[in-house]
Length: 159
Length: 228
Image 1 (cartoon, each protein chain N blue to C red):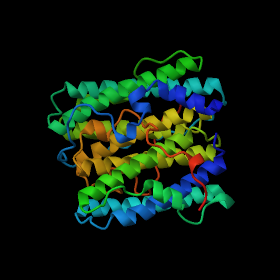
Image 2: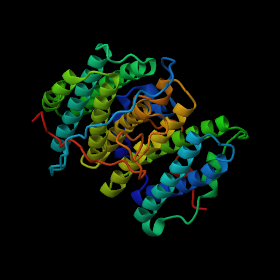
Image 3: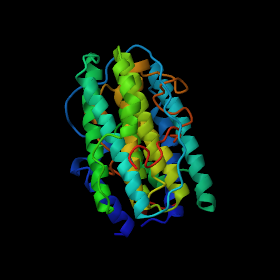
Image 4: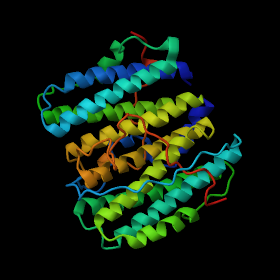
């Protein structure tokens, strides 16, 4: 079981990593809908990181952990808007799965409440990207959020 | 494995292997896509309720779970009626209505299973209070946009309720509520896309996601309303 402080700090580092990766992936994105989504969602992730940092207190990390950045980085070159949207959808999906996984180990009301307000929004981000990619609806909207593809905090340490 | 983790897996186990194994990356089913948006409409706000203070423990868990399954049966019933109403005709919307009806039926089963494991009697019917409120709205529907506006409000109520419930129940049940709330949130995004397009303003009447980036609990149904 991950103690709440450790889990929250891990999730804060994860959000910082996502912000970094958004900036890198956004380069080939040019259509108005996609630019809008990426801009707004990056702001959301900054806000999530800030909220998690407040909850983590002294345990908050100062920057995105290198191991998390490496784990989440694209495995193939992003050369088109479609590549970027597909990568960001996968990124949001892994983020949501990881939050769902960590949530299972949390026990304090503030931490659980924060995840209950953040995780549905990550799923909405993934849904928007799925919509922009015209993916099958059953792929875009699963029956419930799961933990497949999650990162395990035990595998990552502070930078 | 901790007790908490076992409780999480037990709760998610009722969802089915496909979901527990990675729902966010997609379960593969009928091959349809999210299509063009329907005409713009407005959303009627949900009833604003406050969260009652509940005594912690199994009794509170059961009441919260029973309320949740009552919401799901109500939602599934409305979607099923819309599917057969002739009002919903756009291909993408038709697909969404059918898929989401199935989801809500599944969610009802998840909450019922959890109710039984918590030592309670599963609530297997639509919430009577919501049904009474919703009947006149269903009867007054005239267009597909009307139908979308109605189910948007139902999804808002469900998602807000479960987001709120996550911190009202014993921690081992929180993942179940957030897992379901997250899918209701996805439903909202899809419905907003049909109402106002993929660029629907986050500050508008039917936002695809909250402008702030944080899901709220306004409009959450108080545990026990309609069933106690």
